[in-house]
Length: 389
Length: 241
Image (cartoon, rainbow over all chains, first blue to last red; front, side, top):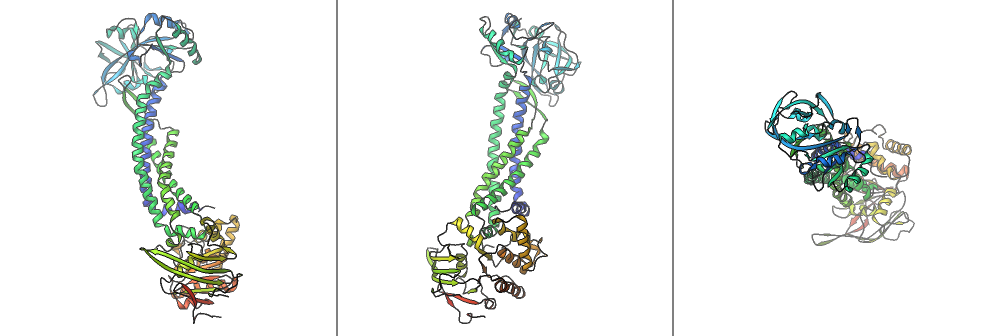
Protein backbone atom coordinates (compact mmCIF):
# COMPACT_ATOMS: atom_id res chain seq x y z
CA UNK A 1 0.00 0.00 0.00
CA UNK A 2 1.12 3.55 -0.64
CA UNK A 3 2.09 6.11 1.95
CA UNK A 4 -1.24 7.57 3.13
CA UNK A 5 -2.32 10.76 1.37
CA UNK A 6 -3.21 12.26 4.74
CA UNK A 7 0.55 12.50 5.30
CA UNK A 8 0.88 14.75 2.25
CA UNK A 9 -2.21 16.80 3.06
CA UNK A 10 -1.02 17.52 6.56
CA UNK A 11 2.56 18.10 5.45
CA UNK A 12 1.39 20.72 2.96
CA UNK A 13 -0.73 22.33 5.65
CA UNK A 14 2.15 22.26 8.13
CA UNK A 15 4.47 23.94 5.62
CA UNK A 16 1.90 26.21 4.01
CA UNK A 17 4.21 29.22 3.75
CA UNK A 18 6.47 27.25 1.45
CA UNK A 19 3.55 25.74 -0.46
CA UNK A 20 1.95 29.15 -0.98
CA UNK A 21 4.91 30.30 -3.11
CA UNK A 22 4.33 27.46 -5.54
CA UNK A 23 0.55 27.83 -5.36
CA UNK A 24 0.69 31.55 -6.23
CA UNK A 25 3.17 30.99 -9.05
CA UNK A 26 0.98 28.33 -10.61
CA UNK A 27 -2.21 30.33 -9.97
CA UNK A 28 -0.76 33.37 -11.75
CA UNK A 29 0.31 31.31 -14.73
CA UNK A 30 -3.00 29.50 -14.99
CA UNK A 31 -5.03 32.70 -14.71
CA UNK A 32 -3.03 34.42 -17.46
CA UNK A 33 -3.23 31.32 -19.63
CA UNK A 34 -6.99 30.88 -19.17
CA UNK A 35 -7.60 34.63 -19.60
CA UNK A 36 -5.71 34.71 -22.90
CA UNK A 37 -7.44 31.60 -24.15
CA UNK A 38 -10.85 32.94 -23.12
CA UNK A 39 -10.03 36.12 -25.02
CA UNK A 40 -9.29 34.08 -28.14
CA UNK A 41 -12.36 31.96 -27.49
CA UNK A 42 -14.55 35.06 -27.06
CA UNK A 43 -13.23 36.61 -30.25
CA UNK A 44 -13.78 33.41 -32.19
CA UNK A 45 -17.24 32.82 -30.73
CA UNK A 46 -18.28 36.39 -31.54
CA UNK A 47 -17.33 35.99 -35.17
CA UNK A 48 -18.49 32.41 -35.57
CA UNK A 49 -21.85 33.12 -33.94
CA UNK A 50 -22.36 35.88 -36.50
CA UNK A 51 -22.68 33.31 -39.22
CA UNK A 52 -25.63 31.00 -39.64
CA UNK A 53 -25.27 27.43 -40.83
CA UNK A 54 -28.33 27.98 -43.03
CA UNK A 55 -26.85 30.98 -44.84
CA UNK A 56 -24.48 30.98 -47.80
CA UNK A 57 -21.98 33.77 -48.28
CA UNK A 58 -21.13 34.50 -51.94
CA UNK A 59 -18.11 36.62 -52.92
CA UNK A 60 -15.96 37.16 -55.96
CA UNK A 61 -13.70 34.19 -56.54
CA UNK A 62 -10.33 34.78 -54.96
CA UNK A 63 -11.41 37.50 -52.55
CA UNK A 64 -10.24 36.94 -48.99
CA UNK A 65 -12.94 39.00 -47.35
CA UNK A 66 -15.97 41.08 -48.20
CA UNK A 67 -13.87 44.24 -48.49
CA UNK A 68 -12.21 43.14 -51.73
CA UNK A 69 -15.24 41.37 -53.18
CA UNK A 70 -17.40 42.39 -56.13
CA UNK A 71 -20.69 40.83 -57.21
CA UNK A 72 -22.75 42.43 -59.98
CA UNK A 73 -26.51 42.85 -59.98
CA UNK A 74 -26.76 40.32 -62.83
CA UNK A 75 -24.94 37.81 -60.74
CA UNK A 76 -27.23 38.58 -57.81
CA UNK A 77 -30.22 37.83 -60.02
CA UNK A 78 -28.75 34.49 -61.15
CA UNK A 79 -28.05 33.71 -57.56
CA UNK A 80 -31.61 34.48 -56.48
CA UNK A 81 -32.85 31.75 -58.82
CA UNK A 82 -30.28 29.18 -57.71
CA UNK A 83 -31.56 25.95 -56.15
CA UNK A 84 -31.75 25.86 -52.38
CA UNK A 85 -32.47 29.57 -51.87
CA UNK A 86 -35.32 30.08 -49.44
CA UNK A 87 -38.19 32.26 -50.59
CA UNK A 88 -40.85 34.34 -48.95
CA UNK A 89 -43.92 36.15 -50.23
CA UNK A 90 -41.62 39.12 -50.94
CA UNK A 91 -39.20 37.08 -53.03
CA UNK A 92 -35.97 35.14 -52.53
CA UNK A 93 -34.28 35.62 -49.15
CA UNK A 94 -31.07 37.19 -50.42
CA UNK A 95 -29.19 40.22 -49.16
CA UNK A 96 -26.70 41.87 -51.53
CA UNK A 97 -24.34 43.87 -49.37
CA UNK A 98 -21.61 46.47 -49.47
CA UNK A 99 -19.20 47.24 -46.69
CA UNK A 100 -17.46 50.56 -46.05
CA UNK A 101 -15.48 51.78 -43.09
CA UNK A 102 -16.30 54.95 -41.17
CA UNK A 103 -14.52 56.41 -38.17
CA UNK A 104 -16.61 57.26 -35.11
CA UNK A 105 -15.36 58.60 -31.77
CA UNK A 106 -15.47 56.07 -28.95
CA UNK A 107 -17.57 57.15 -25.97
CA UNK A 108 -14.94 55.82 -23.59
CA UNK A 109 -11.88 57.65 -24.88
CA UNK A 110 -13.11 60.10 -27.50
CA UNK A 111 -10.65 58.69 -30.01
CA UNK A 112 -11.85 57.57 -33.39
CA UNK A 113 -12.25 53.91 -34.15
CA UNK A 114 -13.16 52.28 -37.43
CA UNK A 115 -16.67 50.93 -37.66
CA UNK A 116 -17.92 48.62 -40.33
CA UNK A 117 -20.88 50.24 -42.13
CA UNK A 118 -22.81 47.57 -43.95
CA UNK A 119 -25.18 48.35 -46.76
CA UNK A 120 -27.80 45.63 -46.71
CA UNK A 121 -30.94 44.63 -48.57
CA UNK A 122 -34.31 45.40 -46.95
CA UNK A 123 -34.67 41.60 -46.75
CA UNK A 124 -31.73 41.28 -44.38
CA UNK A 125 -33.71 40.59 -41.21
CA UNK A 126 -35.33 37.60 -42.89
CA UNK A 127 -31.98 36.43 -44.29
CA UNK A 128 -30.35 36.74 -40.86
CA UNK A 129 -33.33 35.70 -38.80
CA UNK A 130 -31.42 35.71 -35.51
CA UNK A 131 -31.10 39.50 -35.63
CA UNK A 132 -33.83 41.47 -33.91
CA UNK A 133 -34.61 45.16 -33.75
CA UNK A 134 -34.56 45.95 -30.04
CA UNK A 135 -35.27 49.69 -30.20
CA UNK A 136 -36.77 51.97 -32.79
CA UNK A 137 -37.50 50.50 -36.20
CA UNK A 138 -35.79 49.16 -39.32
CA UNK A 139 -34.58 51.69 -41.94
CA UNK A 140 -36.80 52.76 -44.81
CA UNK A 141 -35.29 51.64 -48.15
CA UNK A 142 -33.96 54.58 -50.14
CA UNK A 143 -33.54 56.88 -47.11
CA UNK A 144 -30.35 57.92 -45.29
CA UNK A 145 -31.32 55.96 -42.22
CA UNK A 146 -29.22 53.74 -40.01
CA UNK A 147 -29.89 50.82 -37.72
CA UNK A 148 -26.97 50.21 -35.38
CA UNK A 149 -25.77 47.14 -33.52
CA UNK A 150 -26.21 47.38 -29.77
CA UNK A 151 -22.44 47.36 -29.09
CA UNK A 152 -21.98 50.13 -31.63
CA UNK A 153 -24.82 52.13 -30.06
CA UNK A 154 -23.27 51.91 -26.61
CA UNK A 155 -19.65 52.31 -27.71
CA UNK A 156 -19.66 55.29 -30.09
CA UNK A 157 -20.72 58.88 -29.83
CA UNK A 158 -23.53 59.93 -32.16
CA UNK A 159 -25.05 56.49 -32.64
CA UNK A 160 -27.80 56.73 -30.07
CA UNK A 161 -31.34 56.25 -31.24
CA UNK A 162 -32.61 59.48 -32.80
CA UNK A 163 -29.13 60.93 -33.38
CA UNK A 164 -28.16 62.34 -36.74
CA UNK A 165 -24.57 61.78 -37.73
CA UNK A 166 -22.51 62.85 -40.72
CA UNK A 167 -20.13 60.51 -42.50
CA UNK A 168 -19.26 59.46 -46.03
CA UNK A 169 -20.54 62.73 -47.38
CA UNK A 170 -24.08 62.30 -46.09
CA UNK A 171 -26.12 62.92 -42.99
CA UNK A 172 -27.69 59.83 -41.45
CA UNK A 173 -30.40 59.40 -38.88
CA UNK A 174 -30.25 56.56 -36.41
CA UNK A 175 -33.72 55.01 -36.45
CA UNK A 176 -33.19 51.67 -34.78
CA UNK A 177 -30.91 49.43 -32.69
CA UNK A 178 -30.53 45.74 -33.39
CA UNK A 179 -29.15 42.80 -31.45
CA UNK A 180 -27.43 39.85 -33.07
CA UNK A 181 -26.95 37.97 -29.82
CA UNK A 182 -23.28 38.78 -29.27
CA UNK A 183 -22.12 38.38 -32.87
CA UNK A 184 -19.83 40.65 -34.86
CA UNK A 185 -22.85 42.43 -36.38
CA UNK A 186 -23.45 44.05 -32.99
CA UNK A 187 -20.40 46.20 -33.69
CA UNK A 188 -21.72 47.25 -37.11
CA UNK A 189 -23.90 50.01 -38.51
CA UNK A 190 -26.40 49.08 -41.21
CA UNK A 191 -28.07 51.09 -43.96
CA UNK A 192 -29.70 50.49 -47.32
CA UNK A 193 -27.01 49.09 -49.70
CA UNK A 194 -28.15 51.26 -52.60
CA UNK A 195 -28.01 54.40 -50.44
CA UNK A 196 -24.51 53.50 -49.22
CA UNK A 197 -23.38 53.03 -52.83
CA UNK A 198 -24.77 56.44 -53.78
CA UNK A 199 -23.41 58.33 -50.80
CA UNK A 200 -19.97 56.79 -51.14
CA UNK A 201 -19.98 57.27 -54.94
CA UNK A 202 -19.43 53.61 -55.49
CA UNK A 203 -20.42 52.00 -58.78
CA UNK A 204 -24.15 51.33 -58.80
CA UNK A 205 -25.38 47.76 -58.84
CA UNK A 206 -22.05 46.35 -57.70
CA UNK A 207 -22.05 44.70 -54.33
CA UNK A 208 -19.25 43.13 -52.31
CA UNK A 209 -20.99 40.04 -51.06
CA UNK A 210 -24.32 38.34 -51.16
CA UNK A 211 -25.80 36.37 -48.31
CA UNK A 212 -28.50 33.90 -49.22
CA UNK A 213 -30.79 32.18 -46.73
CA UNK A 214 -31.15 28.53 -47.73
CA UNK A 215 -34.10 26.23 -47.34
CA UNK A 216 -31.99 24.08 -45.01
CA UNK A 217 -28.33 23.79 -43.96
CA UNK A 218 -28.09 20.74 -46.25
CA UNK A 219 -29.08 22.79 -49.30
CA UNK A 220 -25.63 24.41 -49.51
CA UNK A 221 -24.17 21.65 -51.69
CA UNK A 222 -26.70 22.00 -54.49
CA UNK A 223 -26.58 25.82 -54.24
CA UNK A 224 -22.80 25.88 -54.44
CA UNK A 225 -22.65 23.34 -57.27
CA UNK A 226 -25.17 25.31 -59.32
CA UNK A 227 -23.25 28.58 -58.91
CA UNK A 228 -19.78 27.22 -59.50
CA UNK A 229 -20.98 25.35 -62.62
CA UNK A 230 -22.58 28.51 -64.06
CA UNK A 231 -20.13 30.24 -66.48
CA UNK A 232 -21.65 33.65 -65.65
CA UNK A 233 -20.65 33.32 -62.03
CA UNK A 234 -17.04 33.65 -60.95
CA UNK A 235 -17.81 33.42 -57.30
CA UNK A 236 -16.74 31.71 -54.15
CA UNK A 237 -19.41 30.19 -51.94
CA UNK A 238 -18.98 29.47 -48.23
CA UNK A 239 -21.35 28.57 -45.50
CA UNK A 240 -21.71 31.87 -43.62
CA UNK A 241 -20.53 30.33 -40.34
CA UNK A 242 -17.42 28.90 -42.05
CA UNK A 243 -16.66 32.30 -43.56
CA UNK A 244 -16.70 33.95 -40.13
CA UNK A 245 -14.76 31.05 -38.68
CA UNK A 246 -12.02 31.73 -41.27
CA UNK A 247 -12.24 35.45 -40.49
CA UNK A 248 -11.55 34.75 -36.84
CA UNK A 249 -8.48 32.62 -37.51
CA UNK A 250 -5.78 35.27 -37.84
CA UNK A 251 -6.46 37.09 -34.62
CA UNK A 252 -7.46 33.94 -32.74
CA UNK A 253 -4.21 32.28 -33.77
CA UNK A 254 -2.28 35.39 -32.79
CA UNK A 255 -3.88 35.50 -29.35
CA UNK A 256 -3.44 31.75 -28.83
CA UNK A 257 0.23 31.87 -29.89
CA UNK A 258 0.94 34.93 -27.76
CA UNK A 259 -1.01 33.44 -24.87
CA UNK A 260 0.89 30.19 -25.16
CA UNK A 261 4.25 31.95 -25.26
CA UNK A 262 3.39 34.01 -22.18
CA UNK A 263 2.01 30.93 -20.41
CA UNK A 264 5.11 28.87 -21.24
CA UNK A 265 7.46 31.60 -19.98
CA UNK A 266 5.41 32.06 -16.81
CA UNK A 267 5.03 28.29 -16.58
CA UNK A 268 8.80 27.84 -16.51
CA UNK A 269 8.93 30.26 -13.59
CA UNK A 270 6.09 28.45 -11.85
CA UNK A 271 7.80 25.09 -12.37
CA UNK A 272 10.91 26.48 -10.68
CA UNK A 273 8.68 27.64 -7.84
CA UNK A 274 7.23 24.16 -7.54
CA UNK A 275 10.71 22.61 -7.76
CA UNK A 276 11.94 24.89 -5.00
CA UNK A 277 8.98 24.09 -2.76
CA UNK A 278 9.29 20.37 -3.33
CA UNK A 279 13.08 20.25 -2.98
CA UNK A 280 12.84 22.09 0.33
CA UNK A 281 10.05 19.69 1.38
CA UNK A 282 12.32 16.75 0.60
CA UNK A 283 15.27 18.36 2.40
CA UNK A 284 13.24 19.20 5.50
CA UNK A 285 11.64 15.79 5.63
CA UNK A 286 14.60 13.61 4.72
CA UNK A 287 14.46 11.86 8.11
CA UNK A 288 10.73 11.20 7.75
CA UNK A 289 11.31 9.78 4.27
CA UNK A 290 14.15 7.61 5.54
CA UNK A 291 11.94 6.39 8.39
CA UNK A 292 9.23 5.40 5.92
CA UNK A 293 11.85 3.60 3.85
CA UNK A 294 13.16 1.83 6.96
CA UNK A 295 9.62 0.74 7.85
CA UNK A 296 9.40 -0.94 4.46
CA UNK A 297 7.85 1.59 2.11
CA UNK A 298 9.53 1.21 -1.27
CA UNK A 299 11.24 3.85 -3.38
CA UNK A 300 8.23 3.84 -5.68
CA UNK A 301 5.92 4.65 -2.77
CA UNK A 302 8.10 7.63 -1.85
CA UNK A 303 8.17 8.93 -5.44
CA UNK A 304 4.42 8.48 -5.69
CA UNK A 305 3.84 10.21 -2.37
CA UNK A 306 5.87 13.29 -3.30
CA UNK A 307 4.28 13.43 -6.73
CA UNK A 308 0.85 13.37 -5.08
CA UNK A 309 2.00 16.26 -2.93
CA UNK A 310 3.30 18.24 -5.92
CA UNK A 311 0.06 17.55 -7.77
CA UNK A 312 -1.96 18.60 -4.74
CA UNK A 313 -0.08 21.90 -4.54
CA UNK A 314 -0.39 22.49 -8.27
CA UNK A 315 -4.09 21.60 -8.19
CA UNK A 316 -4.65 24.22 -5.51
CA UNK A 317 -2.71 26.69 -7.68
CA UNK A 318 -4.77 25.77 -10.73
CA UNK A 319 -7.99 26.09 -8.79
CA UNK A 320 -7.01 29.51 -7.48
CA UNK A 321 -5.98 30.61 -10.98
CA UNK A 322 -9.35 29.53 -12.37
CA UNK A 323 -11.23 31.27 -9.58
CA UNK A 324 -9.31 34.47 -10.30
CA UNK A 325 -10.22 34.39 -13.97
CA UNK A 326 -13.90 33.41 -13.71
CA UNK A 327 -15.05 37.01 -13.02
CA UNK A 328 -13.67 37.93 -16.46
CA UNK A 329 -16.33 35.79 -18.11
CA UNK A 330 -18.67 38.00 -20.13
CA UNK A 331 -16.54 41.09 -19.67
CA UNK A 332 -16.68 42.96 -22.95
CA UNK A 333 -13.60 44.28 -24.62
CA UNK A 334 -12.78 45.30 -28.15
CA UNK A 335 -10.02 45.03 -30.67
CA UNK A 336 -9.16 45.73 -34.26
CA UNK A 337 -10.30 42.92 -36.50
CA UNK A 338 -7.38 42.70 -38.90
CA UNK A 339 -9.50 41.13 -41.61
CA UNK A 340 -11.79 44.14 -41.89
CA UNK A 341 -9.69 46.83 -40.16
CA UNK A 342 -12.65 47.66 -38.01
CA UNK A 343 -13.20 47.67 -34.30
CA UNK A 344 -14.95 44.58 -32.98
CA UNK A 345 -16.47 44.27 -29.53
CA UNK A 346 -16.40 40.84 -27.94
CA UNK A 347 -16.54 39.26 -24.50
CA UNK A 348 -14.16 36.97 -22.61
CA UNK A 349 -15.53 33.43 -22.74
CA UNK A 350 -14.30 31.44 -19.77
CA UNK A 351 -15.68 28.03 -20.69
CA UNK A 352 -15.59 24.83 -18.58
CA UNK A 353 -13.20 23.35 -21.16
CA UNK A 354 -10.79 26.25 -20.70
CA UNK A 355 -10.97 25.89 -16.91
CA UNK A 356 -10.28 22.16 -17.21
CA UNK A 357 -7.41 23.05 -19.55
CA UNK A 358 -6.09 25.44 -16.89
CA UNK A 359 -6.25 22.74 -14.21
CA UNK A 360 -4.53 20.28 -16.56
CA UNK A 361 -1.82 22.87 -17.24
CA UNK A 362 -1.39 23.37 -13.49
CA UNK A 363 -1.10 19.61 -12.90
CA UNK A 364 1.44 19.40 -15.71
CA UNK A 365 3.53 22.10 -14.03
CA UNK A 366 3.18 20.23 -10.74
CA UNK A 367 4.33 17.03 -12.38
CA UNK A 368 7.36 18.66 -14.01
CA UNK A 369 8.21 20.43 -10.75
CA UNK A 370 7.54 17.34 -8.65
CA UNK A 371 9.36 14.55 -10.43
CA UNK A 372 13.01 15.55 -9.77
CA UNK A 373 12.48 16.21 -6.02
CA UNK A 374 10.44 13.00 -5.70
CA UNK A 375 13.26 11.02 -7.29
CA UNK A 376 15.78 12.68 -5.03
CA UNK A 377 13.60 11.77 -2.03
CA UNK A 378 13.55 8.12 -3.05
CA UNK A 379 17.27 8.00 -3.81
CA UNK A 380 18.68 9.49 -0.64
CA UNK A 381 20.57 6.87 1.36
CA UNK A 382 18.32 5.67 4.17
CA UNK A 383 21.03 4.97 6.72
CA UNK A 384 22.44 8.52 6.44
CA UNK A 385 19.10 10.31 6.31
CA UNK A 386 17.81 8.47 9.38
CA UNK A 387 20.25 10.39 11.52
CA UNK A 388 19.55 13.75 9.90
CA UNK A 389 18.24 16.38 12.27
CA UNK B 1 22.81 -17.99 22.93
CA UNK B 2 24.95 -15.13 21.61
CA UNK B 3 28.36 -15.98 20.10
CA UNK B 4 30.94 -13.86 18.36
CA UNK B 5 33.53 -16.54 17.59
CA UNK B 6 31.93 -17.76 14.40
CA UNK B 7 31.19 -21.17 15.88
CA UNK B 8 27.48 -20.73 16.33
CA UNK B 9 25.13 -23.19 14.71
CA UNK B 10 23.36 -22.45 11.45
CA UNK B 11 20.10 -22.74 13.37
CA UNK B 12 20.60 -19.42 15.12
CA UNK B 13 18.10 -16.68 14.26
CA UNK B 14 20.73 -14.18 13.16
CA UNK B 15 23.84 -15.61 11.61
CA UNK B 16 26.61 -13.19 10.59
CA UNK B 17 29.85 -14.36 9.01
CA UNK B 18 32.95 -12.43 7.93
CA UNK B 19 31.12 -9.11 7.78
CA UNK B 20 33.18 -6.29 6.27
CA UNK B 21 32.18 -2.68 5.76
CA UNK B 22 34.46 -0.11 4.18
CA UNK B 23 33.79 3.54 3.48
CA UNK B 24 35.79 5.89 1.34
CA UNK B 25 35.94 9.33 2.86
CA UNK B 26 38.11 12.09 1.40
CA UNK B 27 39.94 9.56 -0.77
CA UNK B 28 40.80 7.50 2.29
CA UNK B 29 39.41 4.03 2.86
CA UNK B 30 37.99 3.47 6.30
CA UNK B 31 37.51 -0.11 7.43
CA UNK B 32 34.64 0.08 9.90
CA UNK B 33 33.85 -3.61 10.28
CA UNK B 34 36.33 -6.40 9.58
CA UNK B 35 35.48 -10.06 9.51
CA UNK B 36 32.75 -9.68 12.10
CA UNK B 37 30.95 -12.84 13.25
CA UNK B 38 27.78 -12.96 15.29
CA UNK B 39 25.12 -15.51 16.21
CA UNK B 40 21.96 -14.49 18.00
CA UNK B 41 19.18 -16.85 18.97
CA UNK B 42 15.53 -16.05 19.13
CA UNK B 43 14.62 -14.29 22.38
CA UNK B 44 18.14 -12.93 22.99
CA UNK B 45 18.64 -9.34 24.15
CA UNK B 46 22.05 -8.04 23.03
CA UNK B 47 23.62 -4.66 23.67
CA UNK B 48 26.42 -3.32 21.47
CA UNK B 49 28.79 -0.82 22.99
CA UNK B 50 31.85 0.93 21.77
CA UNK B 51 33.33 4.37 21.30
CA UNK B 52 31.93 6.81 18.77
CA UNK B 53 32.85 5.80 15.26
CA UNK B 54 33.44 2.19 16.21
CA UNK B 55 30.74 1.02 13.81
CA UNK B 56 27.84 0.27 16.16
CA UNK B 57 25.25 2.02 14.06
CA UNK B 58 26.83 0.68 10.87
CA UNK B 59 26.38 -2.84 12.24
CA UNK B 60 22.78 -2.11 13.15
CA UNK B 61 22.09 -0.69 9.69
CA UNK B 62 23.59 -3.78 8.07
CA UNK B 63 21.55 -6.11 10.29
CA UNK B 64 18.42 -4.12 9.47
CA UNK B 65 18.99 -4.22 5.73
CA UNK B 66 19.40 -0.45 5.51
CA UNK B 67 22.93 -0.74 4.17
CA UNK B 68 24.86 -3.42 2.29
CA UNK B 69 28.15 -4.90 3.49
CA UNK B 70 31.39 -4.79 1.52
CA UNK B 71 31.84 -8.51 2.19
CA UNK B 72 30.41 -11.28 4.33
CA UNK B 73 26.93 -12.63 4.85
CA UNK B 74 23.97 -11.94 7.09
CA UNK B 75 21.31 -14.61 7.36
CA UNK B 76 18.13 -13.96 9.30
CA UNK B 77 15.64 -16.77 9.92
CA UNK B 78 17.10 -18.62 6.96
CA UNK B 79 17.01 -15.64 4.55
CA UNK B 80 20.36 -14.40 3.35
CA UNK B 81 19.80 -10.68 3.05
CA UNK B 82 23.21 -9.61 1.80
CA UNK B 83 22.45 -10.42 -1.80
CA UNK B 84 18.86 -9.26 -1.94
CA UNK B 85 17.82 -6.60 -4.41
CA UNK B 86 16.88 -3.20 -2.98
CA UNK B 87 13.15 -3.80 -3.44
CA UNK B 88 13.29 -7.30 -1.91
CA UNK B 89 15.25 -5.89 1.00
CA UNK B 90 12.54 -3.27 1.49
CA UNK B 91 9.87 -5.98 1.66
CA UNK B 92 12.07 -8.01 3.97
CA UNK B 93 12.46 -5.07 6.35
CA UNK B 94 8.70 -4.61 6.48
CA UNK B 95 8.21 -8.23 7.54
CA UNK B 96 11.17 -8.87 9.81
CA UNK B 97 12.58 -5.72 11.40
CA UNK B 98 11.21 -3.32 13.98
CA UNK B 99 13.30 -0.16 14.28
CA UNK B 100 13.56 2.01 17.39
CA UNK B 101 15.60 5.19 16.91
CA UNK B 102 17.29 7.58 19.29
CA UNK B 103 15.22 10.53 18.01
CA UNK B 104 12.01 8.41 17.87
CA UNK B 105 11.55 9.32 14.17
CA UNK B 106 7.80 9.67 14.44
CA UNK B 107 6.03 11.42 11.58
CA UNK B 108 5.06 14.76 13.14
CA UNK B 109 1.93 15.30 11.04
CA UNK B 110 0.44 11.92 11.93
CA UNK B 111 -1.24 11.00 15.23
CA UNK B 112 0.15 8.31 17.52
CA UNK B 113 -2.43 5.91 16.07
CA UNK B 114 -1.49 6.75 12.48
CA UNK B 115 2.23 6.48 13.22
CA UNK B 116 1.78 3.03 14.69
CA UNK B 117 -0.49 2.02 11.82
CA UNK B 118 2.17 2.83 9.18
CA UNK B 119 3.91 -0.59 9.10
CA UNK B 120 0.52 -2.32 8.94
CA UNK B 121 -0.31 -0.44 5.73
CA UNK B 122 2.27 -2.71 4.12
CA UNK B 123 0.38 -5.82 5.19
CA UNK B 124 -2.84 -7.28 3.88
CA UNK B 125 -4.71 -6.63 7.11
CA UNK B 126 -8.16 -5.08 6.85
CA UNK B 127 -8.80 -1.65 8.32
CA UNK B 128 -10.59 -3.11 11.34
CA UNK B 129 -7.78 -5.61 11.96
CA UNK B 130 -5.22 -2.83 11.67
CA UNK B 131 -7.18 -0.84 14.24
CA UNK B 132 -7.15 -3.79 16.67
CA UNK B 133 -3.41 -4.31 16.25
CA UNK B 134 -2.63 -0.61 16.72
CA UNK B 135 -4.81 -0.36 19.83
CA UNK B 136 -3.20 -3.46 21.31
CA UNK B 137 0.31 -2.14 20.64
CA UNK B 138 -0.43 1.29 22.07
CA UNK B 139 -2.07 -0.23 25.16
CA UNK B 140 0.95 -2.49 25.62
CA UNK B 141 3.23 0.55 25.79
CA UNK B 142 0.79 2.29 28.13
CA UNK B 143 -0.53 4.89 25.68
CA UNK B 144 -4.00 3.56 25.01
CA UNK B 145 -5.37 6.97 25.98
CA UNK B 146 -3.03 8.98 23.74
CA UNK B 147 -3.93 7.54 20.35
CA UNK B 148 -5.17 10.78 18.85
CA UNK B 149 -2.26 12.84 20.12
CA UNK B 150 0.32 14.19 17.75
CA UNK B 151 4.01 13.68 18.56
CA UNK B 152 4.38 17.36 19.56
CA UNK B 153 1.70 16.79 22.22
CA UNK B 154 3.70 13.97 23.83
CA UNK B 155 6.75 13.92 26.10
CA UNK B 156 10.01 12.41 24.83
CA UNK B 157 9.37 9.22 26.79
CA UNK B 158 5.86 8.95 25.39
CA UNK B 159 7.15 9.55 21.86
CA UNK B 160 9.61 6.71 22.27
CA UNK B 161 6.79 4.48 23.54
CA UNK B 162 4.82 5.27 20.38
CA UNK B 163 7.94 4.40 18.36
CA UNK B 164 8.19 1.10 20.25
CA UNK B 165 4.51 0.39 19.53
CA UNK B 166 5.23 1.10 15.86
CA UNK B 167 8.21 -1.27 15.95
CA UNK B 168 6.27 -4.18 17.48
CA UNK B 169 2.86 -3.71 15.86
CA UNK B 170 3.60 -5.91 12.88
CA UNK B 171 5.23 -8.57 15.11
CA UNK B 172 8.64 -8.46 13.39
CA UNK B 173 11.29 -11.16 13.77
CA UNK B 174 13.58 -8.87 15.76
CA UNK B 175 13.90 -5.34 17.07
CA UNK B 176 16.84 -3.04 16.35
CA UNK B 177 17.27 -0.21 18.85
CA UNK B 178 19.73 2.58 18.09
CA UNK B 179 20.41 4.45 21.34
CA UNK B 180 16.76 4.18 22.37
CA UNK B 181 17.31 6.21 25.54
CA UNK B 182 19.91 8.59 24.15
CA UNK B 183 17.56 11.54 24.10
CA UNK B 184 15.74 10.85 27.35
CA UNK B 185 16.24 11.77 30.99
CA UNK B 186 17.12 9.01 33.42
CA UNK B 187 13.56 8.37 34.61
CA UNK B 188 12.12 8.16 31.09
CA UNK B 189 15.12 6.05 30.04
CA UNK B 190 14.47 3.59 32.86
CA UNK B 191 10.82 3.30 31.85
CA UNK B 192 11.77 2.65 28.23
CA UNK B 193 14.32 0.02 29.22
CA UNK B 194 11.79 -1.62 31.48
CA UNK B 195 9.38 -1.75 28.56
CA UNK B 196 11.99 -3.27 26.23
CA UNK B 197 12.90 -5.76 28.98
CA UNK B 198 9.25 -6.78 29.21
CA UNK B 199 9.09 -7.29 25.47
CA UNK B 200 11.97 -9.76 25.77
CA UNK B 201 10.87 -11.53 28.92
CA UNK B 202 7.11 -11.64 28.48
CA UNK B 203 6.77 -11.70 24.71
CA UNK B 204 10.01 -13.46 23.75
CA UNK B 205 11.18 -10.66 21.45
CA UNK B 206 14.71 -10.68 20.07
CA UNK B 207 16.34 -7.30 20.65
CA UNK B 208 19.64 -5.91 19.38
CA UNK B 209 20.49 -2.56 20.89
CA UNK B 210 23.25 0.00 20.45
CA UNK B 211 23.98 2.18 23.46
CA UNK B 212 26.63 4.39 25.00
CA UNK B 213 25.19 4.05 28.44
CA UNK B 214 26.55 1.18 30.57
CA UNK B 215 23.48 1.38 32.84
CA UNK B 216 21.25 0.80 29.82
CA UNK B 217 23.52 -1.94 28.51
CA UNK B 218 23.19 -3.76 31.82
CA UNK B 219 19.52 -4.39 31.05
CA UNK B 220 20.59 -6.63 28.16
CA UNK B 221 21.39 -10.30 28.62
CA UNK B 222 24.68 -9.88 26.77
CA UNK B 223 26.80 -6.82 26.09
CA UNK B 224 29.25 -6.97 23.20
CA UNK B 225 31.95 -4.43 22.47
CA UNK B 226 33.04 -3.33 19.07
CA UNK B 227 36.78 -3.17 18.89
CA UNK B 228 38.82 -2.74 15.74
CA UNK B 229 35.88 -3.68 13.60
CA UNK B 230 35.04 -6.89 15.41
CA UNK B 231 32.83 -7.86 18.30
CA UNK B 232 34.28 -9.05 21.59
CA UNK B 233 32.57 -10.20 24.74
CA UNK B 234 32.72 -7.55 27.38
CA UNK B 235 34.25 -8.81 30.56
CA UNK B 236 31.72 -7.05 32.71
CA UNK B 237 28.71 -7.33 30.46
CA UNK B 238 28.45 -10.99 29.66
CA UNK B 239 26.01 -12.29 31.98
CA UNK B 240 23.14 -10.52 33.42
CA UNK B 241 21.03 -13.46 34.34
